[in-house]
Image 1 (cartoon, helix red, strand yellow):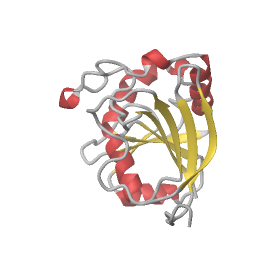
Image 2 (cartoon, rainbow, N blue to C red):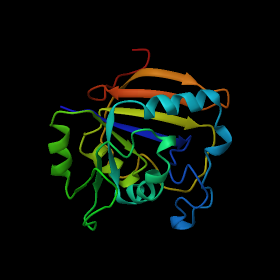
Image 3 (tube, rainbow, N blue to C red):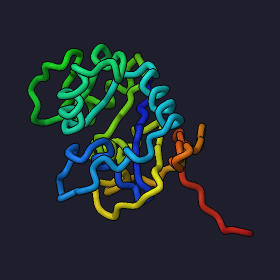
Length: 198
């Protein structure tokens, strides 16, 4: 069985929309694209490079896939190996892609079949609607968060409609000089409750 790992750049209020550039995703009138840029420092860069070097295939939603497919084939030096690994894209409308090693998935059952196969871990970048589908169906094994010290109020959120109650266990954490909390969690069973001080 392959692990599905969600990598996210989020604000304190859970916004994940357009972290990389002003024009990345302006849907809904979003005007804060590129909000991660002020927090880039050497520690942050090393964390990102370590993540990108992990052996993995990628599972992406259509919108994120289209952004990646437009950019990465000509910029592989920034993400070595991205063009050679398998890129799975969840889409009901796409028929084919010219980006090599791309596979179009049509359903949740297709994702479950890949998860239950042998191979590298599967990383999910961006892809908010896809992540919510995975969370709703308990298919996320690990969450690798980069939590940025700002709130935006509006924008697409990582945890939105349909997230199931689930416990996670912290497996690694650090804080960058610019105040970004790096926190990696693995799925930790069911939610436990109790009374404080009892």
